[in-house]
Length: 300
Image (tube, rainbow, N blue to C red; front, side):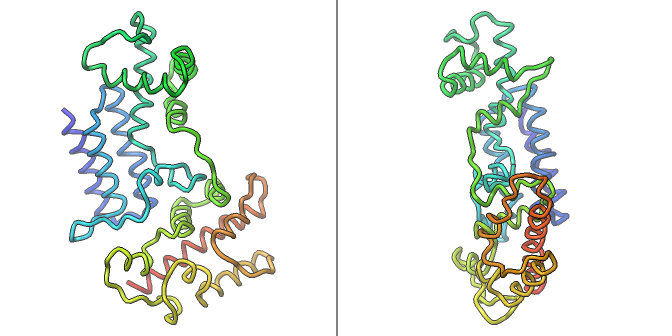
């Protein structure tokens, strides 16, 4: 029964893979189309863990791409990609947690249509998955009463707030000193993704490729004078230094750029009403994106 779901996801991925989507485009496809399919199916039935595992693998392969030798160039763990923007992730939904959140709706319906569904009574084997989610929720909440109250709070005006259940099941995620900048609403998504990867040194720079066994001559494509690594590429290279100098002068900031993490911490605006910092925040992310784009244009 679930083969048709997997097949539809594969067809969507194959179609969009031929269009050479950017990371931002891939994130958009995963969140809108692939998880849209999964949400629809979960609203009708319970997806087995094996099906979730297969869908997750398809998403990972699509996001990172597969080389001719079958390898993926993975520079960031999938669980970290599924974190919110302000925690260093790309706000991709964690499929397993999202599936559990959707099952909380069924728990609510059972609790209001079946006598004693919060007890340890036995149900048919088809409900074991839902009961497993129930038990996890009880463990997190601390008691059956607390879990029941949570479920009730997620159901309002005839609709189940699955995002509220997802946030609770995912747990509290703390923002870092620099990651909060990337959650600013004015940032272009493609800029946010490249800037986040650059800040965490997760881009496919030559040194990263060499560490994964690829034979690549290490030379900066921008200045052609030094080895390529993140710190050099974005701030120490003469090309990048000139970019930052002109950008800061244009914005009336008479200082030298330091490093990406420091600049991101400096632009942690805290409020969308701080227009000057918001302006610099969007400019910073755009500059990182364009430097990386220029590097790739020259290299390839």
